[in-house]
Picture 1 (cartoon, rainbow, N blue to C red):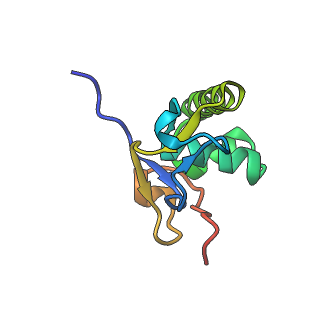
Picture 2 (cartoon, rainbow, N blue to C red):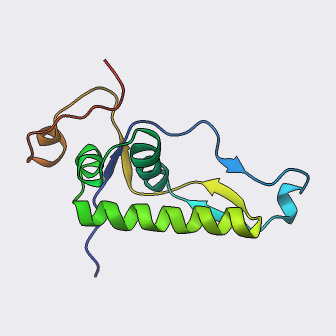
Length: 119
């Protein structure tokens, strides 16, 4: 039996869950699914400008795990853009931080705090 997936911390779920090329009805599109933690990884590195080590701490995962999440997200996003696919944001193993808490609260380790853009 595989090990249960560790929950990743994300700032929030995203209000928009479908994206697609203009002029093509959604029911005709081939879809690519991005998980909430993949979108959070893109947000932290590409929008917030954090290094992978810092972003991994924000999500409560190792740098190597964060790198795999980010790599998968970028491949899916590039495939959708180049091949004209729709993008659906859904699923994943994540927890939403409702207030700033330390990583020790979530994982019993670490000295860094959860930024998440709040308070």
